[in-house]
Length: 299
Ligand code: NDP
Image 1 (cartoon, helix red, strand yellow):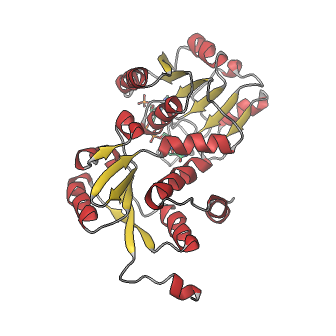
Image 2: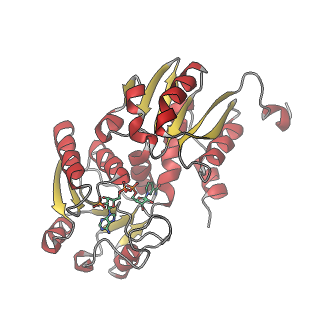
Image 3: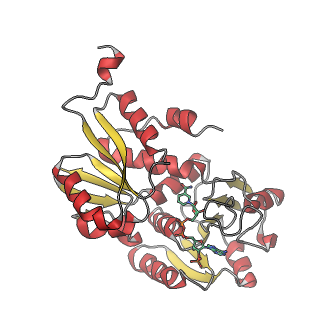
């Protein structure tokens, strides 16, 4: 079989893709279509602009047309839940779904965002199992990370958020983790400098999952001159510091941590590994992650 024949879209080809708005900027089609072709899997991945008011119909259509499943991005991650048949523990606890598997008409919702972060940490050479972690933020990314960290065996999780918009959600997240996992979670006011110093002092890993430090013009809180932790005096060489932000690659938080001798990693590969886990759930096969990384995540 020559390559053009192998890669041809035929009457047997199954489809799936990304639902949300906006979606056109996503790198997921490249990641998944490259992997399907590379492994000879007869599937394609496309992007679909879907607002919440069209979500129910779209999900039903995806189920009825025999798709392998789909991904969801904002704002559809929460809204999709009533239209699914089953949820994974991570999806149930976060109340958000980024991956749906269509098992012969039964739709199972997963959340692979937290897995993506935890796997990117393991691939960077760190392991938080059996250790304490401080997590800044309580939004979508932070919730997924908090739940997966608790499921993956972090013993104590110190969640920190400012007392504003997402404080109530941060309290709910803390309760959900304490009720459903063996991890002990607590909540601290991010602006309480002394309490933050104590929590970070007890932690192996400090993770920023707020949007503070992101490049301006990307929905950022302030821009890249900002840090969610104005007092870096708790940094010490045996603390691992990470940021879910990848633009810029080195946020002010990571620069200050490195200056204090901490080991660091950024959010570059969280997206890759959440996609790799979705691919595994759909196909039962491992995405060729090193090739995908070199082709689409270099630079
Ligand atoms: P959300 O809006 O859901 O949450 C943002 C969080 O940041 C909230 O806890 C919010 O608290 C906090 N925050 C915002 N501004 C400030 C501030 N000035 N001071 C203190 N806290 C603040 O966003 P997401 O969770 O979706 O995204 C968060 C970050 O994660 C973004 O930078 C995003 O790009 C990144 N991300 C990276 C991914 C990856 O693959 N690497 C994947 C997903 C997200 P409050 O409610 O009080 O404002």
